[in-house]
Length: 86
Image (cartoon, rainbow, N blue to C red; front, top):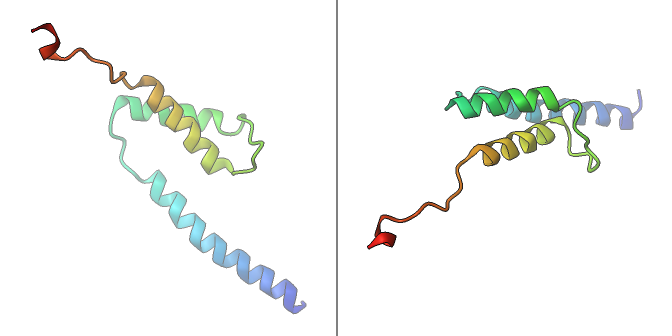
């Protein structure tokens, strides 16, 4: 094997060592609410069928799906103040 091939194998091993713990850490976060659980399920079910034109990868696409879901279900910040009626 040439030096270039060894370097590529070494780089792949290092990258796998960096990326895998990060993904495992994100997946091990406790579920905080019913909304959180529902959005995680939605992201899991749609991540492989969602388009990825920017080539950002499955984890980032799943995170985008999850974030959109959480923001969609969150109540809007436009609540009437108690002082507004006074």
